[in-house]
Amino acid sequence: MEKKMICFGCRDYELPYFRKLGEKYGYDLVTRPEYLNNENYELALGYESVMVRGNCVVDREHLAKLKERGLKYYLTRTAGYNHIDIQACKDLGIETAFVPGYSPNAISELALTLTMMLLRHTAYAASLSHEGHFKVTDMMFSKEIRDCTVGILGCGRIGRVTASLFKGLGAKVIGYDVFVSPACEGLIEMKKTPEEVMKEADVVVCHMAYFKGKNDKFISKELIGEMKEGAILVNVARGEVMDNLAALEAVKEGKLGGLGLDVIDNEKVLFNKDHDPKAMPNEESQMIVDLYPRVLITPHLGSATEHALIDMIEITLQNMEEYRLTGKCKNSLIK
Image 1 (cartoon, rainbow, N blue to C red):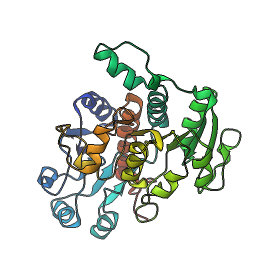
Image 2 (image 1 turned 30 degrees about the vertical axis):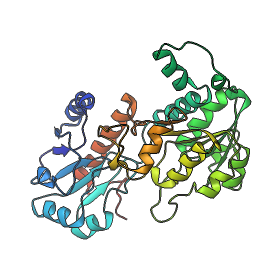
Image 3 (image 1 turned 135 degrees about the vertical axis):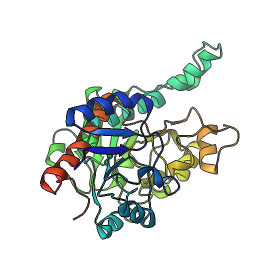
């Protein structure tokens, strides 16, 4: 088998890492900036192996065309895999695998950063300073994080790292998860329901995995309504698990003191594009812009760290090596 792979959604700063890791594993990695989709799928014609990331979406019809031209391995360098039609890959005989975990610190650090920016109003203060206003205003007054209770929804590997960061700053940390790991003991005070977390926490951070059709808009208008007046809500997990419009309305009405987002539902409408801030593509994105600095959004950059990038590329190449050498892969999405 020729050790060649085409990789989509590659950003300029990532290219040196693709080259270095490609050399390490003996792969010729062809990098493309485009996100693979039904309109440009021809770019992957003739390749046995393809590496994609989130927002690369190819349907059954076009996967079949790639299969006809030699596609055998369709690998994602992400932990999420809702952008892959797993059943289509299975039916077509295309192997597909994912990266079950990469640097949890990358996501946790961003969660902490967004929280502290909202808690201490630093985006607001910096914006005023940039405009020449150097006075401390009433809005800049805040609590300290050590006097706050931080709630974690989703207490897996990433959630536990986030808990340790906040606990290191002196905060009380509570959490909820359907599956409670023994590793939470002594780190997170686990609650039996998400409502308990929402009622008690001054800050709620979402690290929930997304299961399509099962936990869509889990953080609902009703659940947000359980939160304290002036509380902060941060979502660095998946946009689909939260009712974003409900969260934005809660900020607009003064129910929430701040909202931090690194993810939204239907990200392709907003992310990886430039927009006129006065004419955003839909109501949700317009509210996000208009509610700044009480709403802070970053363009899904949680994994945009050197450590996380190396993990994602390297584990994907290791997945490919497993297939090549054994015909199987422990991270296969096909069961």
